[in-house]
Length: 195
Image 1 (tube, one colour):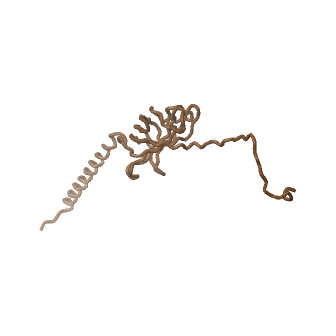
Image 2 (cartoon, one colour):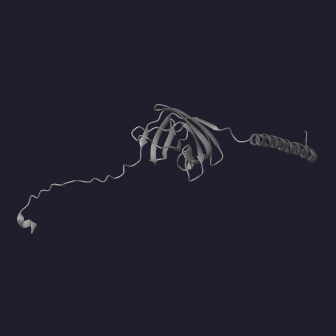
Image 3 (tube, rainbow, N blue to C red):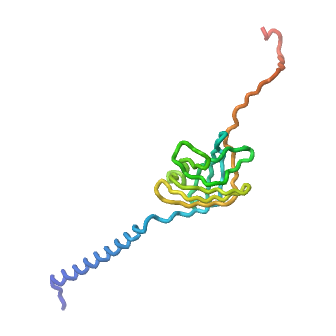
């Protein structure tokens, strides 16, 4: 029969513990190497659906909102972005001007700005767009959009869309004042009711 001495058991256990420590250190080293590669590459999103809204306008500028989504809500997060363009000349033929729009964190807007408040995602998972640009190319009612944005959590997203964008006019029609030159009235009752 073969019996192990306490010294032999101690040596086996020591080798086992050292081996486990070496494997643990190797795994930790590999996981740390992934962290040292820098930030993750930007998420690239090719959207399939777009809608537009004309929000408001002045003599110098107009605000449009573009909502981009994919065919399947599980595929990509939606992107909702507001653009400040030059003034609209015809509210019956709304178009978004071609150009490059930059995200600004200012309350003073000029044409070519994207005001703060644009976001990527939906519900409580939505992230504000901190910086970036969106380029708009237009041919008739067909648009090509491409943009690169940094989100409020530091992640980056690159977006693109090609297709038609129907623009809905959300600006309320102001109340109209109507002046009449004359009026005709009729009363269909009895003389006793007039007293």
